[in-house]
Image (cartoon, rainbow, N blue to C red; front, side, top):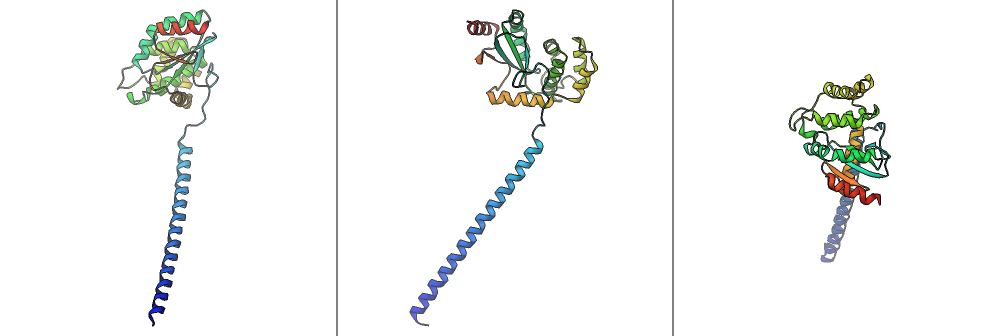
Length: 235
């Protein structure tokens, strides 16, 4: 074979090799896309199965269903709380009388958002269960009384929270003696709602409890700060 023919043959072989590499690269890209799409579909399928089911909305829920509204006053106070949170109990002791005074004077609406930030701080998901039970209490028109009673029997972090039977007993102590309350607690009727409340709190930027907003503005969780904010919003 002449030198010229050898060079031509080499050029042809190189072109064929390049074409094979291009085809191989193209097929690898196609396969990668198919794998990614399949993985995405599998991930979405798993998420769809695991995401919370549609929640029931308790009585007296706020317009966005992220809290329980107490009162009918023009100034809205949002309180994010966790019934296992010791500082929330301190807040209730210190600021509760101020909130009650404003409620009695019809100056405020207090929207309580019982989140479940501290589930890992108990051995039986007490934050979720107590929040859900408070929604059951709202159905019986006893949210505020029940919340006070829960704080009075607040368990220590790191151990078991109150059992369902004990939550039902707490309800009975504030007049929730209708069997519907006990059934609601035992069934975990509002646990999906609690997840909705907790997710909405995170979306708003709430990272701890207690967190307070007055007229949409973040406010220190003290009676003095709340008083100043309410008076300013009322002008």
